[in-house]
Image (cartoon, rainbow, N blue to C red; front, side):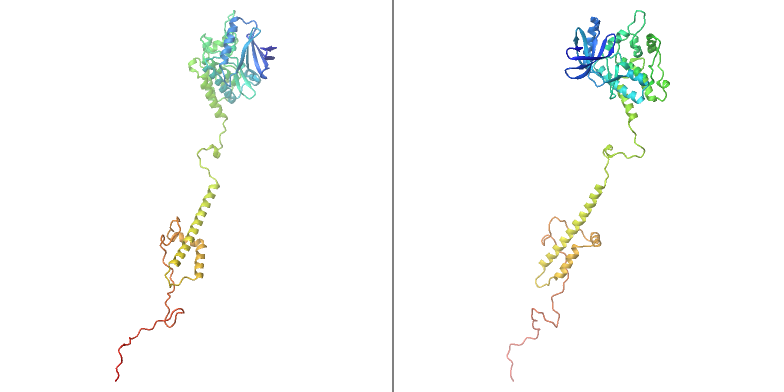
Length: 418
C-alpha cells in the first residue's frame, strides 16, 4: 500500500483503538519512517483531535522526542509520518531483563526528563508517559513517542465505562488527574517517577486487582521505598525518586531539574577516580608548570655560552691594551720582545679553569663590551716594567758615542812668558 504516492507501508508494528502504526519506506527520500493511520471508523471529533495533536507534535524538535516529518490524509484517513526508531520500547526491555542497573536507570531518566522539559517549554503535556511510549534505540538513546494520540487515547482510557470501571494506563496516573484536575507538567513528572520505580524494582509503585484500586492508591497510599523491593540501591537515588512521587504537584521537581540531577548522579557514579598517589597528566592540570629536561639543558648551554663570552672579551681587552702600550711608548724606549708578547697573549687566550675562577673572584669587573677600547676612551693600565736604556759605566752604546767628561774650562787669555 502506498500512502500519498510516497510512503510504502511495509509492516505493522503497532495497533490500537485509535488506529495503527506501520514501518514504511519514504520512496522520495529513501529512508525508513513510521506511519500512523487513524482508524477508518473514527468520528469527526477524534479526527479533529488527531490533526490538532499533529500540529502540537510539529512544534517539538529535540533529540529525545520522536520527530514528526509529515502529516496529511489518504483516502479520507488522516496520517502522521514520524521518525522510525530502530530498537524496542522500555516495556519490552523490562519484560526481557526485569530490574535495570541503577546507573542505567539514571541515564534513561536524564534523557526522558530532558525530552519532557523540551515539550513543557512548548506548552505540550504528554499525559501518557509509560514504558510502552519510551523507545530505546540501539545506541542507548531514549525517545518519547505518541505525543497527541497517546493523550487522546489516555483521555478515553480514564473515562468511566458503563459498568463503572476505570480503564487505561492507571498504573502511571498522577493523583491530580485521578481527582479530575487538569494535567500539567508535574503530571508527566509523576508518571516518569512511576516508570523509574518500575525500571529499578521490576514492579510499579502501586498494584491492584482493578484500575480503580490502583487509582485510589495513587491518591492516598505511600509507596514503599525501592530498597525494600531490591536491596543495595543507593539511598540518595531512592530519596530523590520518591520526590517525583509526591502527592502534591507543587512538591515535585520540574522535568529540567530531574534531568540535571540524574545526569549529575550518573556522572558521579561512572567517572573513574584516580588511584591514591597517582600523578595526573599535565594536560588535565591547567596552569601547572611543566618540568622536563629541556629547560635544564638550555640553562646549562646559557651558562657555558656566558663563560665563553667573558673569556673572549677578556682576551680581546688584554690584546688591545698591549697594542695601545706599544703605540703610546715614547721614542727611545725599548719594546718588549716578540717572544714575551707571544707568551703573554697565549697565556691570556688559553686560561686555565683556576685562572678564570681567580680572575672572576679577585679581579675588578671588565668594562662594558659596547665598543672596542681606544686610547681616548680607555685609560691603559700601568706599563709593564722594562730595562732602562741607560748604558752602564765602562761600556759603550753601539749606536752612540759617550760625551766628553766635564772638566775645568781652559782660559782664553794668553799665557804670560817670563
